[in-house]
Image (cartoon, rainbow, N blue to C red):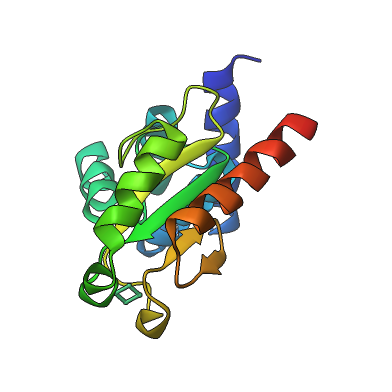
Length: 161
Ligand code: FES
């Protein structure tokens, strides 16, 4: 089976789990992103068809929410908080360090598809700023040395696997 047909098949299964209910569009998109780590074009088209929603509306919703990504993302999502509380505690320098350590800019994915770098506005842990969230793990009071340590460990782990 081609990748596109696999994506379509999986999307149809997801829509079925939501009983083809139009009002479940956001939940369907969340599940699609959960399955592929982003929203592939083929999945958006297939979801629209299966739910009876125009493709333009599906795209509108998919692009409205920051949580959705239309571009393939890496195995690990690195989010640097740039909210006010983190900003005053040096988040800009942490972001800069993260860009240099990973070799990518926010919104980009590393060539080996291991990391995607993103910036976010407040993750609700202001007292711990500057905060970096990697996948679901929160890292508080992040320093330059801590960036090296965390990413170094993850890269080592990636090489071993
Ligand atoms: S501003 Fe960064 S966690 Fe709130």
